[in-house]
Length: 187
Image (tube, rainbow, N blue to C red; front, top):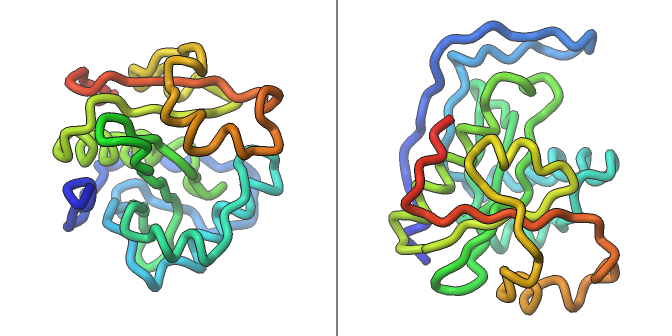
């Protein structure tokens, strides 16, 4: 799975920043780059994830778990500030999962989530992964990216790896989505 790891940063084009009435520093889309996470990013990644756990959107991840898997994460940065993250977790040689996709409040609506997922799709394809999946309570974003809502049973790797030991098994309310790779999801 080392092929899932990449180097370098991808820059975004210019866009208009939308105000959400929050007293936070505005993120400029043209200043956002996507890069491989580094060990020094663990605290910022954990903070982003913890904020979304509090909102009820994600399952918790400990700093130790993030550190152990830091090489699987990609981050979106605005200068030195991490404004988004995503993890690609291998479930088998053929299937990987998009996990912990988070965009900070000040950076939402700028296409950063699409950029992060596209980078994970690129990495998965380069590693020979045949299917990328995601589990979410709000499938619309992934459907726009070309994923399809499928029965959980179509992803037995996920059920075996994570679902069976989860306290929310069979009552999680998550949609299973999958994207056979080789299809474009550049949106």
